[in-house]
Length: 388
Image 1 (cartoon, one colour):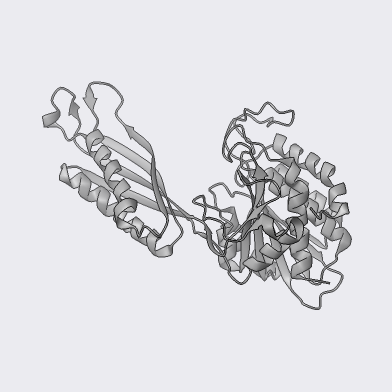
Image 2 (cartoon, one colour):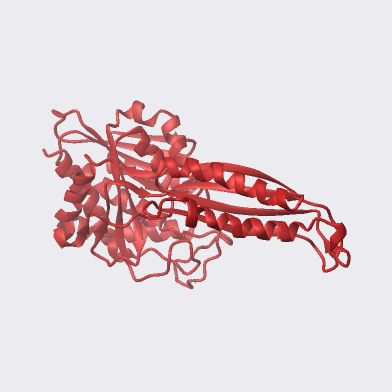
């Protein structure tokens, strides 16, 4: 792979940063230590501006090229937060914080973008301006939206924005991307079922919420199977069923909780309506009631068709055209980078992590072998998008 010599020389140093961040995971917006390290290093690298506190605890660094004839400003984004999991890797750099770990590789994302920032600040071999964006709270708390709402795009004049995520199962040295919807919209729902509690020996005098909720579970699964166009992707998963507390009482209430994943806006709207109809009407058949709470968490991550080729070209410059899948399958996982792509055009790409544990698994660890590949992608993206 045509990894720049200077980037190769940084590999060991950036790996040490990554492992230090891994040992000290922080959740959601409480990434104070990590954001502090990021800001300090960006200042050390000689960035032209370093601004903490964007979107509460996000950090933006500005690096200006040797020239600025194009007046272009490109944003590069990495996420910083960890997950509430207990690590089981047993590695020397395993989490030192009980119940928290970097199980999604955000430590690696942060380190790779920091390494790229160091290289770009040293070389400045581009015409324009780079905004390196370090985001908090990707895992469910909409840190991407918070940074956008804080005026980040306008404040720094960002015109286009790019993101990258590691992909377990995709071989090291490969990238995957597609124009249009890349990752799914994420919605969460809660269904509260109210029946009539009673003695387990006299079910005819009760309205059994466990039975009612079980029928709702089965009926909800028919929405995707029988109401959604088979050529359009959707997932409904019920992930929690809570009812009752003993073996001889029919419970008065039951609760179901789950998630919906879609790529198409019309399908997303339809499922929200249909989910409510199915739950309420199924409950009514049994004389019970169902109340549905539906929360839209993040929109789909949609790569701009005009900007996706820039990401493809940068990846190909690093690993070769044959190692870049530019028509990759859509992913049902969600990403709040979607908010940045709603604010500005750009693209989100997956970098091969190799044969490792899945993200969000307690045995996961970021593969340090891919650090120079990711750093090179960021550098090539800047240098090819804004040639000096």
